[in-house]
Each structure stands twice: as structure tokens, then as C-alpha cells.
Amino acid sequence: MTQETLPDQSIEFTLDDVVRGDRLDHALALAKPDFSRMQWQRLIQEKRVTVNGRITTKTSLRLNGGERITAVIPPIVDTGLIAEDIPLDIRYEDRDILVVNKPAGMITHPSQTDELGTLVNAILYHYPDLEGIGGERRPGIVHRLDKHTSGLIVVARNDRALWFMQEQFKRRTIQKKYLALVEGQIQPPAALIDAPIGRDPNNRKKMAVIPPNTSALARSARTRYETVTQFDNFSLVACAPLTGRTHQIRVHLAYIGFPIVCDHIYGRRKKSFVDLRRHFLHAAELTFKRPCDNTELTITAELPPELQSIIDTLTASS
Image 1 (tube, rainbow, N blue to C red):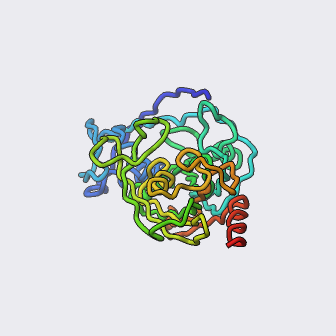
Image 2 (image 1 turned 90 degrees about the horizontal axis):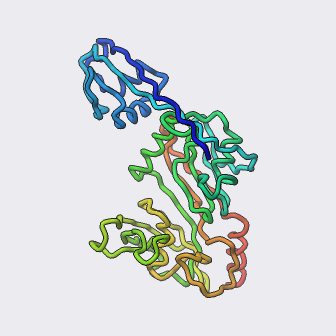
Image 3 (image 1 turned 180 degrees about the horizontal axis):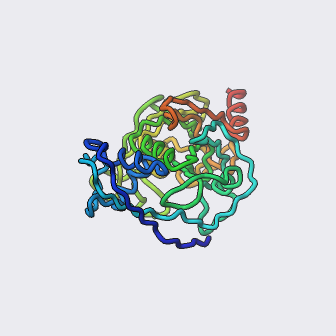
């Protein structure tokens, strides 16, 4: 992937006296409505805005009116990503966001080794007019799923929506529910797993639960789960990650002794009657507030056929 380097754009203007007592970010959004308030907040935090010749990072700075503003606007960078006509399963859409049901096997973002066939390539084809500021001209992927995890992903259609959704993830107000089939009859049937996660000291490509105070790189991680159905040798559980660590659900369930079925990184390597080319983990539900009017939405995605057929087989044999 190639990337074209473009120069920053500098703009200068003077605020009217009517902004006296107003916040800096709000006043800038009124003075220059081409950029949203959230975009102005980012520019301020990135030290790209000066007030009367002095840089400030305080978005809530109270104004006296008549301030001279200089803002350095970074360019939208075209990275040369290729749009591909790949079908998308859209579960929700408005002018600000999409909620896509990603299939297992699809990577979210292109990388040096996987430039094609990703969710981003597909979105670029179906939505070529997505906006951006201060970043790549690409869909605003708000969060990610592992390659072999299926389910719901939020995509922002403009920069204002991206910041609005990211703020909800940052404040952990978005509710996420995953469905996982694990080895064994999980005990207790419902619990909160509170165990810090960091890089596995024995394998840097993996994550692991790290004992407290043994590594500065370990971060707190909490996952709540409850049993949906128990079978003879398996349990279907609903998991709600309360933090957003890499591979969190997979690591936590393996840590308590009930790894996800067919998880070849964190699970058991013994053969099972379940034959999958992916692990049994599906992002089934998201609850969040939409950017346009702050209305709370709950979006769902049923188990994909290859997972539902396993549940049907287990149910029939129990």
C-alpha cells in the first residue's frame, strides 16, 4: 500500500465578541462549521490550535471574545486501498454509522500481508464517499474483531460519528454480548472473571493472564459470563466483556479451565466431534447510542449457519 504525503493547511481567523464566556471547542464549531465540534476537539488535543499565538490543549477554555485563532489542518491521506465488490451483511444503517455482521475468516483492516479481502476493502466499494479528517481516507472502523470471530462491527460514516462512537467505547457505555461454546460444563454457571491480561512472556504472539504486580504491561480485564445452555460435554455461554483487551474472552475462558471450542491458540488440542475451521465465538449483540439523536439502539446478529448447526446437533443428542 502506498501513501501520498500532502501538506498541512493553515487557517487563521478572529472570533466575534459574542463568544464571550463560551467554550473554545463550541465557539470554533460555530465559527467554522465545516468541521464538527468533535473534529475541533481532536485538533485542539493534538496541539494544532493556537489562541492569540499560544498553543492550548484545553477544549473547555473559556473565551473573552475577539481571540485570534490559528489552526493547522492535517490533510486527508489517500493510502491507495483497493475497493472490492464483496457482499456485506448490513444489520443497521443511517447517515452516521453502519453495523456490519462480519463473517469469520475476514480480517477487519488491510495489513502488509493481507491487502485484499478485508472488511475495509468491502466497505470502500459499497460506501466510497465516507468522510475523513486528519487521517486515512478509509472507513471509520470503530473497533475490531479477530479474524476468526464473526459478528457485529460498528463503522462510522463521518468523523463526527467516529468520535462519538469511540467515546462510548472509551467510557465503556457500549454493551456487547458474545456467544461462545466452551469445553465442559462451566462452573459456576455465571460469574465475573477479573484477571489482568498482557503479552504471554513465553510466546509474544499470544496474550495471557498475568499475575498482579508481575508485569507493568499487564492491564486490568473483566469479563462477565452466564450459561445459556449446558450439554453433556459443552456449555453455550453469553459473555459481556467489560474491558477491551486483545483476545480477552478467549484468554479468560481458557484461564478458568473452559476454553472455547476449536480455539487452536488458547484451547485444547485434543480432537472433538466438533469440526470447525474457526473458533466458536460470535459477537451477537451491541447496545449503544446513535450519533444523530442519542437514541439507544440494540442490534443483534444470529449465530451463523456453521455454528448454529453445532448447537442443533448438541440439542438433538442431549
